[in-house]
Image (cartoon, rainbow, N blue to C red; front, side, top):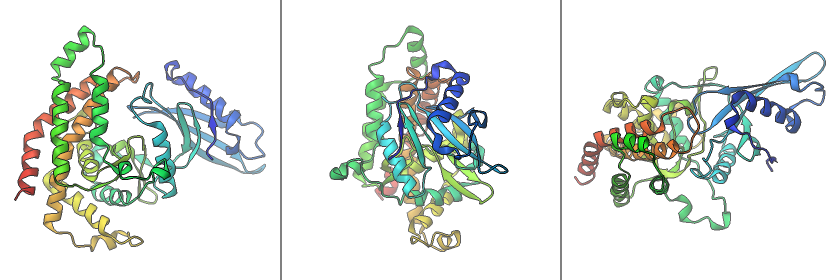
Length: 379
């Protein structure tokens, strides 16, 4: 059983105060992290905020534990404080369930302790990739994603392990967020900005219906997905040349093409620069590596083993046009997310502008990717 603290860290107080509160909590309540010889815990805990998150706030905690009088050992853990109001955006109980499941498959870190608006968990050594590194890492990421997609995660309620648990979440999630957004009250300046960005929520809903019909008509594959594979959610441990995925709050069963198509969109980072979307050649390289790893027998996942797997050009092209179609779904997903966050988050980020840029990118590629998908599947 993972311990739980009836504690809330209020992000509105600012990083300095939150860091102090986290340090006090670690020293007072997470004593299992310290050696029994530790007599001065407080001076051996250092807490610092990490940058990069646009949903939550992350803090790194460096702990020095004394093994004996002459030696000591350093350990790092992380504390994630959920963004304000995000419990209405995401199912936090389900997220915690998935994290526990993924840790059993060694696909995620161990959760050490939960509190009312977040949790402490193990730190995975490594550095986050940058958007400009995704192209050079595409084969490694593709193989890791293929193995991630092989995981079968159980429902929270094992007595209700039904097909509904494995229904794709992307369209239902967008509709839920859209319904919330349609109830928002906008002031005059917000309305003016929203209209300038052409954020038509009713039109978005129609596009969601249209794209879902495409997916249902062709019976596309559903797997357990990460759903937020931006560069900063991919860690690389340089010492062992190994990649890890982090941040599982959006994960769930979904179309595998969504996970890949969304990842392709993230080649541009938060700048939303469509020119950085991977070329057709880069897409095919990624998808070939993905399919080879997906077909590799369990226990024989070394790189040379999967490289020998034969994948046809038609298989590659079939998944490629799916991924480009679902890049459109990803644009709608994050555009709606941006609109929602613009009315709730206190993180210093222009969510509404981001939503407008994503929706503009959606409209830029909409006809091309829909036509390519229909042309391939109806030939």
